[in-house]
Each structure stands twice: as structure tokens, then as C-alpha cells.
Amino acid sequence: MSARAPARSTVRGGGERAVAPNAAVARGQRGSRQRGERTRESIVQATLRVIAAQGVGGVTHRAVAREARVNLSLTTYYFVDLYDLVAAAFRDLMQRSQAELGLRWSQVLPRVKRDAARALRTRKGRGQLRDALAHQFVDFLHHKILHNRVDLATEHHFLFEGLVDPRLTELAELHRARLAAPIVRLCRLLGSDAAALDADLLLGTAMRLEYEALLVPPERYDVPRLRRAIRRVLGWILKLS
Image (cartoon, rainbow, N blue to C red; front, side, top):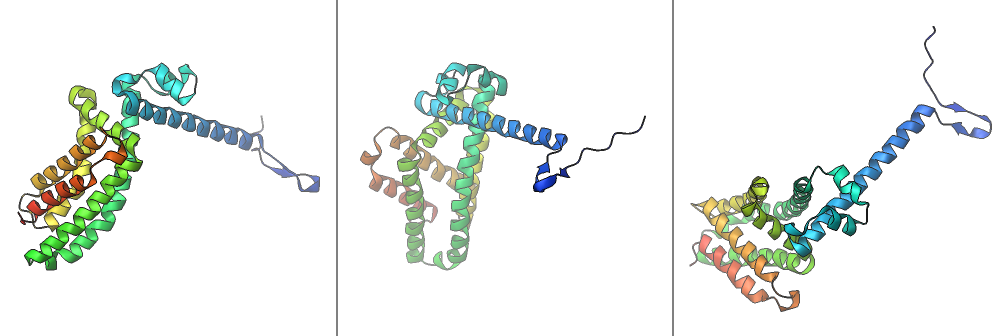
């Protein structure tokens, strides 16, 4: 039996190109895969919204399907169980949060590295460096408080859940470690002799202030207190107090 010739496109009269069957199947598969990815992503984003509003305990297949406006069966099709769904949502949030932070730190750390050697020589220089860094910290935190409250609330729900659910502990610890890593580098640039500890104190202060911000409407949040707290911790790291 002779081998079948491979399917190929042919050009018909008038310039119309006949689509090879194999190519049509491949395009159909790609379209189906893309629709599946969009559906999965919509379920993940719906899960994040449910967690922001009700906590991790509020996540059910029915609640997520309703929020995502998809059939209930799709949540179990794409995710093995509720833990798989919550963990996927956590990873999505971690990825977006860390990408945003990475961009911020890529702008801040080179400037600190450039200016720190000169600034650290005098008390006045250290004070100026503290004030510049405090301004950038407060600007970033205030932006999150005003414009990213859903992500902020969800992040704190996840971190708390990591304390009580061993299945999420590793993810929560990984997230915190990634948040801390650039702050450790910052503290080293600032001349800290205990950079990991100082970074933990600065990160802990920032996260506590974020949590407090979620307890009141954004317009009522005490921004001057936020500024004083961050400025004081940075001053301690820079040996100004």
C-alpha cells in the first residue's frame, strides 16, 4: 500500500486558499486550549474575589462558580479540590504581587547603592536617606491601600490561613521570604549589621500597617501615622535613634 501524501494547502482559482484539514484541527485545538485557559483564569480570579470578601473559609465550588459565572462542573474540572483551587489563587496573587514589587525595587535599590556610601558618612546624610526611603515606602503602601484593597485583603487572608492550615504554610512562608529578600538587600546597603532581622522588623511593620488600613475606609486612614512609623524604623536601621 502506498504511503498517504501529507496534507497541504492548495491555491484555488481567484486566490482563495484551501485550508488543510490538519491545520484546521490544529487551530481548533489551539482555540479550545485558549478558551480553557481563559475559563481557568476566570475561576482563579473569582476565587480571589471570594477570599477578599469572605476569607478562605468562604471558598466553595458553588460560590466560586457563581462569582465566575461559569457552570459548577467547571470548577471541579479544572481543580482537583478546594485546596487546589485556593493554592492556585494564592500562587496567582503571589506572582502578581512579586512582579509589582520587583519593578519597584529595581528602581529603588540601584539609587540606594549609588548614594549610600556618601550618605552614610554623616548624620545629616543618613537623615536625608531615611526621609527619601520613607517617602517611597509610604507612597507604595498608600497606593496599595487606596487602589489594591482586594489584593491586599486577599494577601492577608492567605498569610493568616498559612498559620492554621499546614497545606498553605509553605506557600505563605515562601511569599513572605520573597517579600523580605529585597528589604534584606536594602538593609545591607544601609550598613545594617543584622540585615535579616532589620528587614523582618521593617516588613512586619509595613504588613501590620496594611492590616490596620483594611479596618477603616481608605479616606479615613491615618497616612501621617504610616509615615511616622516607617520613618522611625528606617531611622533605627540607619542608627539615627
